[in-house]
Image 1 (cartoon, rainbow, N blue to C red):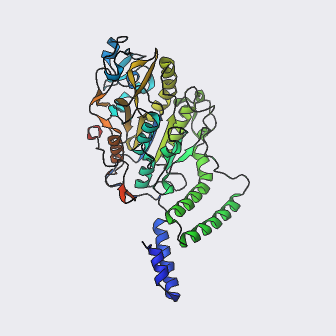
Image 2: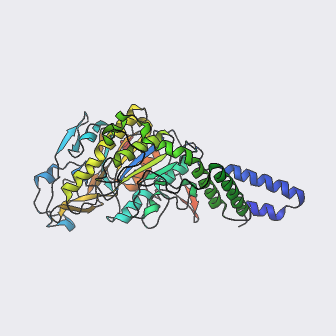
Image 3: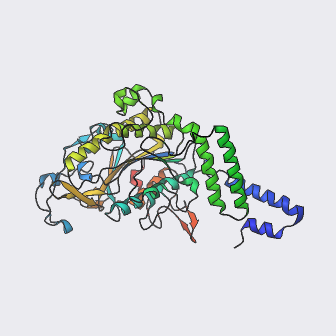
Length: 463
């Protein structure tokens, strides 16, 4: 099939061709010049931005947000449940209490988050297709697990654009290198401009600055590269890929000045730093300290505060990753360590967003790729469970203090208010003013979408 550009070049002639071709090319470049420009949603949104606290490994729902009195009562007894027949039932590692005016049941592992119970919308009927990390993690991010598709953040950026041209519209803080790695924040067949920008454990974007060249020299080099890229596009190269490449060069150049300022946590008051558990409020640099993850000191607090600063500066979608939730053994000690790393920063994020007037239109999400089994694995662990688990949402148009869905008496399987990952994606997009059936991109002869051919908005959780 002839492209519009090729048709013009081969059928026009003389000076008329030159003028007409130049005009056509200018119009095409203008239309595609800034794919990240803000776009109108399909309908009025409740949320404008997303912070996803991604718990890599599969947190145990029955130890955190899914209270099961029957599991407590039958702790140590054999299970008669399917493939778990004969396995010993294992009660939660900490007590549950009802919290807030809503009476949400939350584990003592989360004392600070418990104080925000009335902001939390618990999704206790989550389920996904497979109990394997790579597939479930990819499905949580991209909608399917057979092969990579555009990630959730990329779809959001494609649908809405960004609010700050000097910052990436989609940032992933310390994403895991396993479980399909970069595909979880990639753009796949969407233009490269919509892929996530990785912020590493130091709190920095790798290879952003060029210490060997001045800003002026970098600008000249960038202009020259743009000329080469545009010449290649005009000769019939992949225009979308080349435009995405040019856009990424331009964004990287602009970010050199803007990104370090946003990531500089010393600009925050000591009170705010202390709220997130950073250095006891003593101040500190802009990175994530001595490492990112359980036992990494205040690193998760730094990441959560960075996420707030990023969305406040106009970044559309921020994902903060925390690994170490794959508790096949040492369940009690591991859970205590992980929950302690998350509790204060996550609660602080909700508090900080609310007092700044941002929580009402910022959707905060917490959860992992699946849950854990109510039956013990070995003496002190839990196996993977994709049939039923918990996530929560807060802010951005959801009903705080609501518990939606439930697993059976022990927590093996979702039985009411079931929310598949496709439904979860459809609901997130809906809160952002995007119709998941209309947010499409033509690829391989069909209109692709995040939810594929499935997904239903969970209207019960909408405020």
